[in-house]
Amino acid sequence: MRMISNRISVDDSKKLSVVILGKVERWKESLLLYWLLAWSFCGAVFAYQFFGDSPFQYSIPMLIMLLFFLYFEIKMIKVFFYRRSGYEHIKFGEEELIIQNKFFSRGKENHYKTNEIENFYQAEHSSKNFFSFMEDSFWVIGGQRIYFSYRNKKVILGIQLNEVEVKRLLSLLNGQLKQSKKNYRMSIKQSKNAI
Image 1 (cartoon, rainbow, N blue to C red):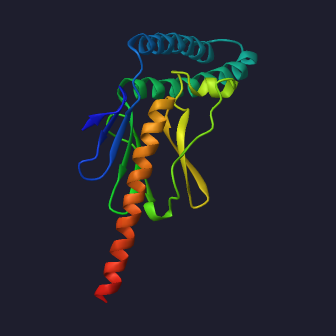
Image 2: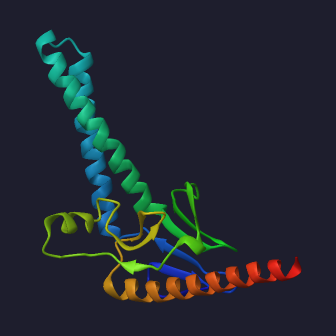
Image 3: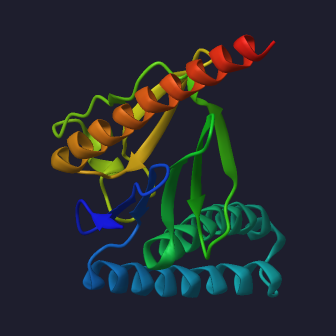
């Protein structure tokens, strides 16, 4: 196993396996925790007002505030735990690519047949765009920098990578994809020759 940056480790002993950590600096993780605690306190106040003996005319606005709070509370808990111990796992199998975002070593695996993947490309990114700036923020899970087309769909990966990491990872992924396609063609040729 080797490191190509402080967040990305690569194991290419058998098939390529890449792990991209979701870690951020310690002070950013602390800010996320403080924000989450403050947000939880506000939610407790909303819940107290909603379930308390406030007049009926305030029930609907409090319910709306409580739902708004719950939505962002769940999102921030997810971000906090991803930044604490989550990672993105990209691995090549015999004839497939498996991508998985993991939290506490759990996460849904997405499988893609390598012979149906054209190539890996760098996603468009502008540092002057407000939405790009927001995707690069440590309080969101987003800002994927690499994509490929699969069955007329765009699949994105590589959460918040910098330019150097993107170039290194693109080189590795495209090299392994080329090798996987070559192995796939050879296995088909051998199976036809065996018949």
